[in-house]
Length: 85
Image (cartoon, rainbow, N blue to C red; front, side, top):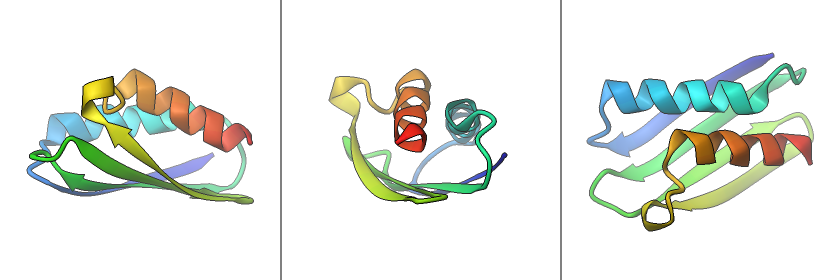
């Protein structure tokens, strides 16, 4: 498994980055191939983009803070769902 994260999020702290990075790695699990997850947005915005690319997968989802979708547990489950498709 090789999963990398990239944060293009204005105002994001190192602790939040580390929590989301760990969530991505948990969601990818032991799946083979190179995986990349990029987050785009701003801490001042309620909706961020999450772009996931990997073997046979290239997709973008929007994560809404008001729905709890910026929480690490949600990110891990979303990445796992995407990687399983």
